[in-house]
Image 1: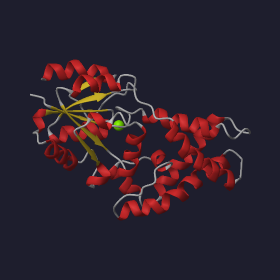
Image 2 (image 1 turned 30 degrees about the vertical axis):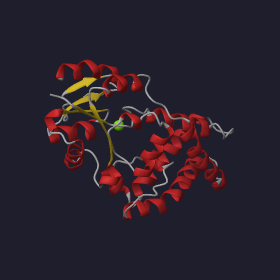
Image 3 (image 1 turned 90 degrees about the vertical axis):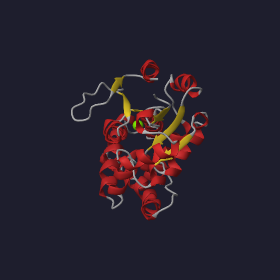
Image 4 (image 1 turned 30 degrees about the horizontal axis):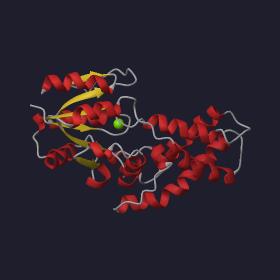
Length: 258
Ligand SMILES: [Mg+2]
């Protein structure tokens, strides 16, 4: 009997990838000499390379913080690794934008700094949710306990929830990997969430877009799961219990399980 639903946040309820894309587009448009697409691609590439070169990279992998979150988060969070990020990330942002410009033939660190700042503003300006996020949550809220299980920095995930304040209201519990100390797919954070919701694994369905975190971790913990496969990916190693292409499709599945 299903009583509780665990939801992933980014690219499950919030359309983070689209918000990042819009922030890049708006920021890159500022450089009249370049095609926005060209600069965006260069900055994405340089940011990813740079992010992986830092000593904090293994920590960001374990907690689940991607290079583009590094471009706008403050990382004003508890713990030594977050302290390192707090000091590293301002320089990372400027260097990523400056190197991206450079790769496109513009050597202008001052402009890099300006664009790095603007990207933060633009990301906050463009919070997107999927068109069916609120209707799905509305239909589940009355009959199920809802728990948000998200990977990321506590300060950044809370910022996302502050700029989309309708979302946290639906949830009985919010678990953020950076607060707990380990991220999905580690079974420890799923066990922690089960404890928090005071349920056993067979009472829960996990809903998420990421096979390697949401689905793998739920499988390891014996939690049924629904994979939202936005991009028509094929699955080899990790097998979800159910697979859908949009949030709305989870409703009949959950109904059947209950
Ligand atoms: Mg996700």
